[in-house]
Amino acid sequence: MDPLENAEPQGYKWGKGTDDSASRTAWARFSSWLECVCVVTFDLEFGQAIEVLTCIQKTSICYLSFPDSYSGCLGDTQFSFRLRQSVGQRGSWFGSEDTYSGDAPVTLQRDLAHYFGYVYFRQVKDVSVKRGYFQKSLVFISRLPYVSLFQSLLQLVAPEFFEKLEPCLEAVCNEIDQWPAPVPGVTLNLPVMGVVMQVRPLPPPPQGYNCQEIPPVVLPTVHELDLFRCFQSLLIHIQMLWELALLGEPLVVMAPSPTTCSETVLALVSSIAPLKYCCDYRPYFTIHDSEFKEYTTRTQAPPNVILGVTNPFFIKTFQYWPHVIRLGDLKMSGRTGEGVSPISVLDQPPPPCVYTAYKTFLHKDKALIKRLLKGIQRKRPSEVQCAILRRHLLELTQSFIIPLERYLASLMPLQKSVTPWKTPPQIRPFSQEEFMKTLEHAGPQLTSVLKGDWMGLYRRFFRSPNFDGWFRLRHREMTQKLECLHLEVISEAVTWIQDKSEVEIVDLVLKLREKLTKARRQQLPVKEEVLQKQEKHVETVICSLPEDLQAVLLRR
Image (tube, rainbow, N blue to C red; front, side, top):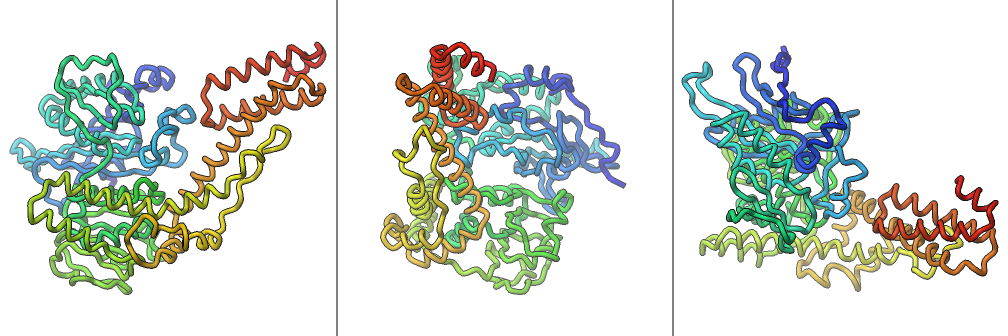
């Protein structure tokens, strides 16, 4: 029997109601941060059950919101998961009017195909409960990859919620509904439960916002984890881990706790920033996940995905995967899979290690590893260690991407070739061999000291989903830029059409109208004031035409 069959969700009267239009207005600000809030409790007869749910996929959330029984998590545990949106399910409330994602870096945009779950789980002894333990999770569901912000928010809210229950959660949701919408690059002050959380990507906060003189809780970032803490036990493999993430290789992270595995998966994904990781990734993955069969089948090659797991069952299930990270003892023996070169034996409690036959294209940065290890000996602050590691990974990714960006820019047509009388010229196709020829004089060796087979790494990258995602995004941006340039030259042409024939004037007016409509429909990077100005100019031009032509154009 399905343990959740009789677990019916109970919606709060202050949550999103059934009337979409009314809910959209009433909870618009709340929805710019969170999709819903869930409370998951453990029922002795039915297993995990959602006690309070405002929306979406209760069964998957139930299973993902509790650590595996093997984890033995006593006290408070925080972790995160990522959940695929159900096929046919209504998408984000924002859709085409999501101005946030249009301005945000690709790594911080809303994920319209997945939900992020941020969990605060508590398990403590309680003699009043049959099972002998109080077990409950408070879960924030969002489309924003703001792991640092939401985990910090849970640290404030969850302890108070476990004491005061529903009234506390209702008050918090009402406070979130008063927050300003997230704006990339703007410092925000977010009041909640008597404190102000200050999210500080510079510049300083907007003028005139009243913090009520409360000393703020400053968050340096909304999304970044402590990379050094996540990778400390794997520092000698950091070059390999970066390459595996860059190439979108199938990778499993096995750890004793959901906290460790979820943070390590998110750290791997962020290690290639500012490049977006375009494959799937699941910070916490269980045997109850809806994609369990898809990701564990042996009838086809492992998919391009990073999975974080804690259940010992996965040691045998994933023994054939090409890359496995073990971060502790999962309390169950397993066998080494074919083609995998172990650093230690799987059937013994291993130290943190990587099991793989992968050979890196680039040499290790021994100076970096030595510097970080010396920092550990000298007890250098973790924040400093993290900054050193993050800067290294950022510079490494930038050195890899800059030659690609430079070559891609050369495929763009010259601005002088864009004329009002013809359709925009096409972007030249991307040629891998042509790009390779540019590396000799304009390759990553100009900005990186690392030696190795850079060309081999690029060739492998071209076959990865990350290259496909990067190229599609950049090609779309370049196409939009061409459309904007074409709109500009048509607009300029309209201003000096006095000496043109009526046929040419009508043709230009129709083209400009089409471009203005397309600019709005495709959300081209053109200010609304510019579009409105051009629309008024079109009306002026139409009014200068004979009445019969005016009537035709005004009807179109």
